[in-house]
Image (cartoon, rainbow, N blue to C red; front, side, top):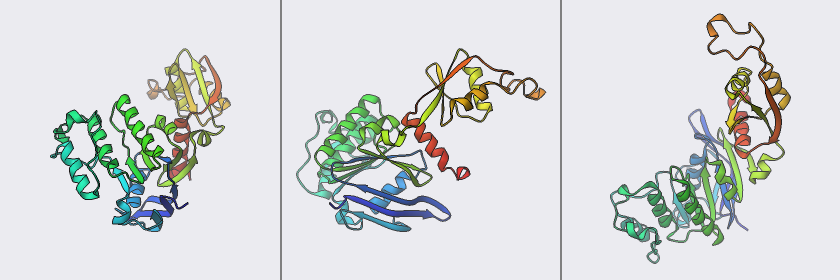
Length: 307
């Protein structure tokens, strides 16, 4: 079966900056592919390459088996980060404009949008505006839906409703590409592609990407002093409830950090910022890593200093 979207060794440079670096990506009907990555990872640039809004510096981009063009874009529904709506038009006028561009019958407004049909988009709450953008993007029943951080800035309930819309589109056989930096949304995707520094650093299901990675967990009655010791050893420490999690490091490494630098390790001018002299009382054990911790580890490994 011909993929709906296919990137083969796609690269995009801006002068000396490599924004997308030899990325391979395929999306088929009914798939929800999540592009995960921090700001600057290359997600939005890759989306623009797929849409044909930018040309690849190297590699090949194909939509429905052909290079991006006006014809292929007619089969795509796109929601950009800025929603792509006209603020000075009402919801109904935005949908009418989209219908004039794509053709077809007038889309039915969802019940949740009907009270806002005659409201200017610029006056809408963000969650409502995002629902309007989804409605417009889906009005012509696209074969491929491309969503660039579609749930950014909305409350959890609105986010859940938007994801219901995404899943409905996939169940109707549309392929979906969605960029996000919310790790909790990853479970909603059929497959994940993790990007860092313009490259794909992991691909697969959430469980497959995490694999058998473990995280050191520190239980202590004095998490502030414990965190200072761990960070003084150059290890990343994240407070989770009443425990400290140290992703990507073995408990033995953390235990050595907790032994402390010993008396006199800090200079006389750094007493306020120095970690405690000597060990703190703590229990260190292992737990399975979370997707967010694995993502952090992959992103750190992709930094230039790590290569």
